[in-house]
Image 1 (tube, rainbow, N blue to C red):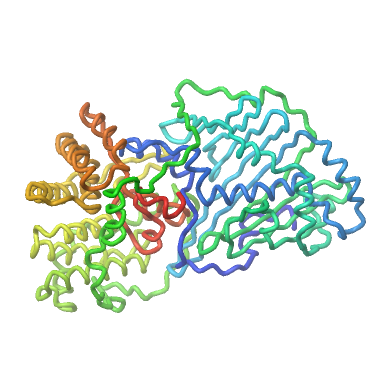
Image 2 (spheres, one colour; image 1 turned 180 degrees about the vertical axis):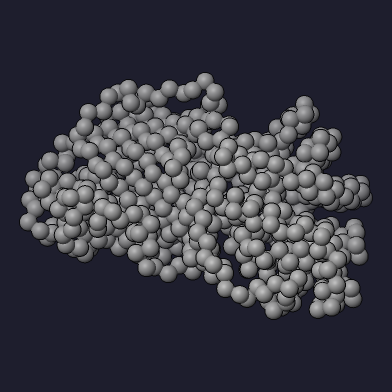
Length: 606
């Protein structure tokens, strides 16, 4: 290991092949949720709480990783059998340290993928730890400060100060016994015991920052689990540790892991250790700026399990008839060889590596800006679709099936990051519009039309310099609001005839609540909200009642608000390319399989 090696070198040097098509299971990305707090507030959602972060699989994984950090900080060099170091003397020395400082770095990578894209996000933090006062860290993502964490043992609090975006927050959470125990996981006696239970491979000597070091490697994460507990399942885990021979103290710790079934590899490095340095108590006395909203969190997780027969029936209906599932039974035509507007989509594409959320968003906006408008090529596309598929003779179901196939093909050839993919997205919209013309009151067809439009139309463009939304896409308060408004009128008429609304109706109404205020139509949004409140007992969506009532209060005074229908979808940086759309957007398989209706979150342990 040489000092000039970068984290990127380490990641690429692991030579582990990751299947990009497997299920994404890493839970919500903290950075995205914090930087998009303004957008979430506009949609009426509550800011993400620390309990949400801490109860996700990635948080549990990070806790497991923290144990490994503690191994590095307090005991990994006690492995017997590596060189002639006096391990007992090292143990005695390390156990005298009550304070230490270190740097941590992390890279998450997805790719290279079959579509030619590779996505990465990089973070770095400076960490201060005192066994008396607690811990403090400053965390940077892609070079920008995005969160400060405090674990305050004397006060019994955990604070997260989130400066990213216009809406600044301080998330305040009490330390319970479990979290205090997690903080204490780094006790050397416990760590040493765990280490000596496992196998390791000696890596021999090397030099890091001019220091002579000895290294070992571990590939078994299970040895860090407490009795009766399990660590998150892994497809791959590698831990490498280097100890300076002269001082007999750790100088470099490196782990890399791929959670079970994930396309994302995370590599973490800890270095720049300072042992026994004086840390003043004032370092652990945070000052909360006056412009920060303080959000108290008691640490309890939201319980989405059904509590009534109606809620249970609603959950069963959601599973049996998922949103956009009306046409799942249809066979899809093969459009992989279909050439539209003269593009050769089989030509090799250059690889593209994008780092972080902002880079992905800006790249998408620049790519889409180079496409011709839909209306400009609509007539030519219709001629080609009729000539090659005979769309004018198709019935509604065949049109929808063709539209779904074309939409899937759009994602396969690059989506909104490809200069030549747009004919497929435009064609999908065109055939869905044709189906809608044939069945104008078929709400399931309207759902498919909306999905095809938002496949390539994002809600807003992104201002990279200000790191915030720049311009609202007029198709959202325009055509999309019209389509959802039509569905709402159809729903009202059906309810008057005794129809009991379903999960699909709920999703459509929530989009009305989001879209109508964007055209200054608060009355329609308020009407949809009140219908959902009135129908909650019959429909079974009582899980959403608190959010619906808050939304009603906000809309009544002209404040945009709403209820989030689906959770997840941005667990890896590569999934950011599907963001900036309606909550109801389902996207391609890799995105859709990472999402779950809010009232079904218990099925994934969220």
